[in-house]
Length: 66
Length: 66
DNA sequence: ACTTTATGCAATATATATTTTACATAAAGT
DNA sequence: ACTTTATGTAAAATATATATTGCATAAAGT
Image 1 (cartoon, chains in turn cyan, red, orange, blue):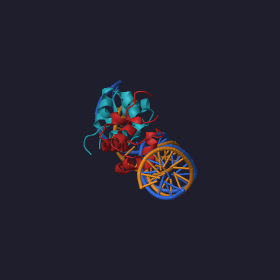
Image 2 (cartoon, chains in turn cyan, purple, orange, blue):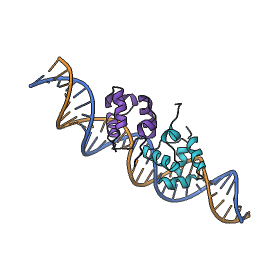
Image 3 (cartoon, rainbow over the protein chains, first blue to last red):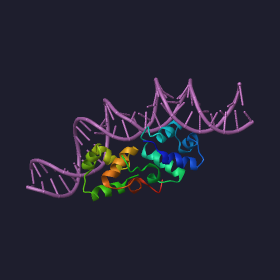
Image 4 (spheres, each protein chain N blue to C red):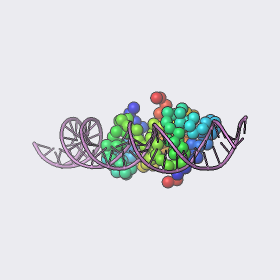
């Protein structure tokens, strides 16, 4: 399932996928695939993304539906 | 870093590591190692644990310090 | 028209999460 | 004493997250 909240938070910080990836220490593809919901990041990566974007886990990665 | 919040939430539900593991669809060892902070679970696993224990990601997996 | 920039996609390689099996110990129950 | 139950630990196997490289396209800038 797509992660639109992540994409919005990234754009709010005026970052490209590549720029966010670099700040977080990961590849552009990894960020792109997470935004597309095509895979299942590790907790540490989620935490790094959250801290970079000043959001919490619930802000970016919680989902009500299954 | 140890995840005491997870352990507490599990005990509040009166579940052993093995019982939680089974509900979540994972091995006892995996739960044990996460509680000990010895590895880095996937987001989907964190979400499964949260839903089983009626907690959110921030409740169980957010950490202020690094 | 040409050049960047941003993004999606795909194949192969590598790192690591997770499983499987097994052994050890301490606590609690009988 | 014996048996369960709960937990920690470890080696080897498997699944999968992530990196690497490269190609394709659309939008924006010049």
